[in-house]
Image 1 (cartoon, rainbow, N blue to C red):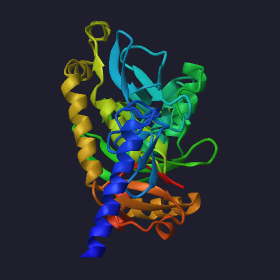
Image 2: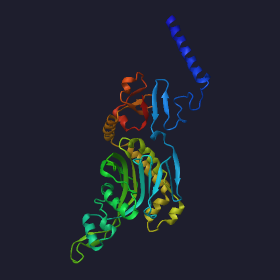
Image 3: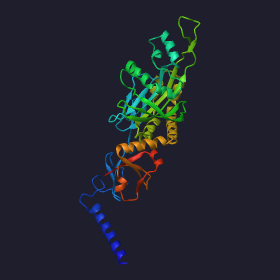
Image 4: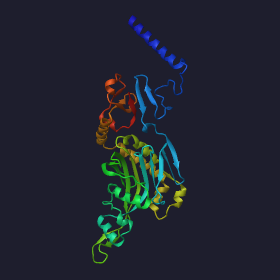
Amino acid sequence: MKARLTGLLCMVLCAMMILCVAGCGSNASSKPGGWRNPRDVSDIDDDDDVVSTKEKVKIVKSASSSVKYEKYDNGLVSLDIPSGWKVEVAPVDYIHYSFKVYNPKDKDYWFLFGLKQEGFLKSEKARKTFAKYYPDAMFSKLAPINPQKTEAFYKVWNKNVKLSNETELKTEYFPYLNKFKVIQNLGKSMLGGDILRASFNNASGKTMQGLFTSTVMSSGTYMLNTDPFNLNSKKVDVAPLNVYHIILMTAPDDEFNNWQSVMDHCISTITFSQAFVNGFNSEEQQLKSTIIANQKVYDSISDMIMDLWEKRNNSYDITSQKQSDATLGYERVYDTETGDVYRAYNGFTDDYSGSRYQAITDDMYTKPIEGYIQK
């Protein structure tokens, strides 16, 4: 009984000391610099520390979990973008309207939207045949899309955007997808194309990951003699292909899980103004009807992308995230009270004696990182 009273007395004295430090000290305040509830992080800047006073765990919020949005509007298109990010609009017409959104502090984080690209043929034989008649035409120079699928479009992306960057845009507007490799075909977009999860290397050789979609459509059939000097020669279909609703969203391989929902949100907010619709070429009726209904269309595409993303095969996540943690010197834990996942410094679980933060299970590697536990 005496031991219990002694223990109770110690607890009361400790509580009084804490209250005195929090409320009575000359520097104590609810503003930054004074004590605050560790669960209240609304007034913490991106680089501020969130400290658990209960178990003395130092947590720094991840950039992706603390994103604030701002509205971008150039009079033609508007959308939400992460605060501080930039928008670059390609110098093209309404039909081929395209813009790229990126983090100027780290250009590995970006997404790109394009209404239409054209000038593609259906096979290499068709391209060579067309080149005999019109050697200087874009159809003769662009790599064909064969088969007529989303993956084939991205397989020849580098060759075609190089030509566009150098001859049409005169700037390196389109990023390059080196060693593009599909990890998983997540399914069909509501606009007809596939939604692909893929990896690629950036210009410096760093592994990147992203989601890619586009809709490849044929303009019909147009048969042309393979030999312009022999009317009896075999014929080949040279009717062009058009590619619509091009969306790419990418980040470093180990960070894409964290940023996918951020970029998906931005895509969902794309809105074209009436001024854009009025200026749009009426020839593209199918594309125009999509633009007029864009608030519903791109929001629905965003929902579909998110749904398919959440249903993805997680084997790649587990393997790549484990490799990334090992390379960067992290171990991954989760908060048993909130379910939030954190990257902790290597050796944290050896140093930590509490019960709140525990090592994650393999299925948790699909979850985004809420922050970093530091020493």
